Picture 1 (tube, rainbow, N blue to C red):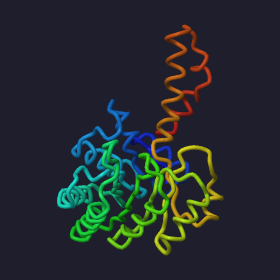
Picture 2: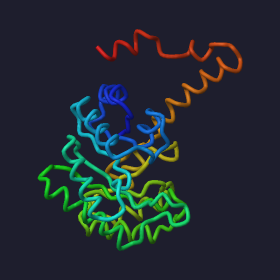
Picture 3: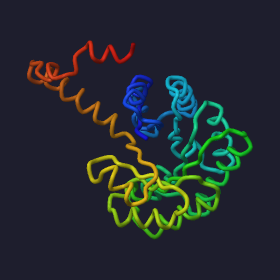
Picture 4: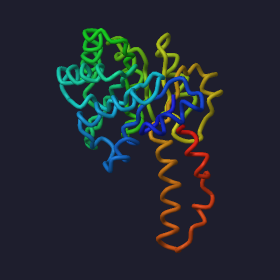
Length: 249
């Protein structure tokens, strides 16, 4: 389930045969000139509408922390998101505060419970993914991550996700603890393969902002060559115009 950041990248991924896609908060933020986690709720909802309108496959929405702290705020915002055409939504437990990077345990669980209630009340067929962010925010405690994911599952999450896991033994431990609910793994680099993750029992794989980072890598390399060297060799290695243009027939 790769992560496009705009309608064009979504359309090309569908052409490649991917049956479902997910938005990326970072990829979208960069595309409109912002840092990750610095877009507004209104911008995120508009982006979901744009993405779901661009392709016919299911779209999972990266909803960051629900754009609220308290459960009632999360519930209201999730309710708004369910009206955008998304097929899934994720809620994470990171605070954005480096000194206290995870929401307190009980509050985190109540936030997931509120998201579940909002989806159920909406009547929308939206899958809820609960994310525990410890391995991304400097709290790489496998036991605490599993404790949180188990509680999120009990609170109504359909899928569990701990981005930042890279050790296969840790991934297998999370899969085992979450069973029978599915686990999503973030593949943001070449530490594993689809086959290896499937063999470990992983049911869903996403790449977060990695495809966007890859695109920006090529863009910046070519632009820096022009700015610093006055040459254009990177442009000569680009996919031909006709090939790209033809994909949007």
